[in-house]
Image (cartoon, rainbow, N blue to C red; front, top):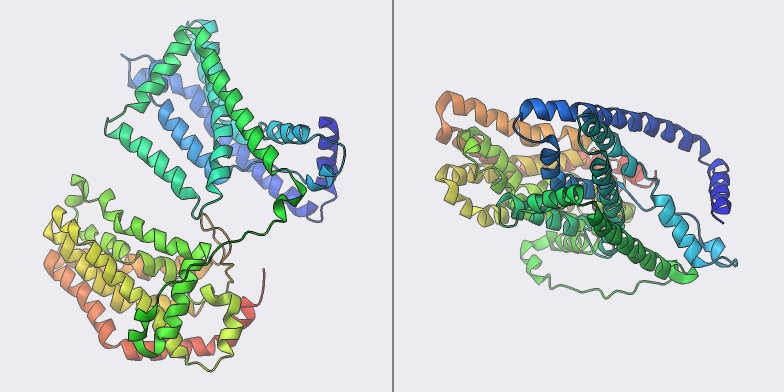
Length: 492
């Protein structure tokens, strides 16, 4: 039966309409695989002599064991984002006299041939051979290497379990990031030393080979759990059931205080909260708000206050950056209908501006506790917030007039680059680099306070000339109106 499955996939590959494209991609991926193999092989060959030279008083094997915890966390994260369970077209097979268990076993068995399962061995196998050549017990080293192989397979099947549960929630990457970050934090602050636990486990397997049964049983348990999950999903009607969900409505009456732009703000808020892709802009607020915690607690960054404004721009403008860079592509699905209505384009753009400006003000207020790390940080954030409202909001709206790529709002949020073009990359220069450059220049010339004043002054000028800037931006959108309608009408 396995031979029959392989022949079906072979025929499917060569008879596919995208056969030529698949060949080209596979050749490119082949060169990329060779590149990584060369890197890992080189690492495996130089690892022992490099560790011996850098740490002459320590055992290289113990050093490697001490970092295996970080390798496990890193490999699990990498697999979550880049490794998917290999699939085959199984629905035609379900009407044939083929046991579902055989299909599931084939899919799981095929997954073991993943490149990710072999890549690490190009580093560990040469290192193990070097250990044997240096006089380490052969049997013990081989058991240790077997434990590494079993760990790779455990990570492999654990990844599929995490994916199957994460796929049911929005922003599926958040649970794995939270768990991995939590484990790393507990280990880093020495609350629970996971690195020591993992290191001691591999050392015990090296010293007492009979303990190899522990990872073997864990692997068998994960395989059976994956088998159970996949077997439950292997039904003809599993992809035909309609997903029924209740739509919760929110009271948006407060938007009426904004006058004639209220209907557009309500549409934007509903769009943001009801779609996977736009909802990520809301969750990114948390990351932006906490962004400063990666830098301010460290003495290194306390000594470079000219960098504060960059953190302030990013922290108070995270929503502006994530939401604003895809204006008006968020509305690309119904842009043609929107443009056929009797509405003023300026009102449409003004609603976007108001949302971005409000987000900057809210994030600044929520970020006031950063004053705990110094009053200069709060001053820099205040200047950055004014700059975001006066300059970057208008900059984002102007850059949106060059957007020509359609966005499918129903697609996943994580690692989705749909709608991203040259505009999104180029706009980052005036958005982030320019205020940092201006602030750094005046900081070294006249000092910190004057630099904050100058950055804030740029923002005030933008606010004062807001109406004139909006008139110019609106004119640019009107000139590009039919070009954008035609571009958003294309599916590719």
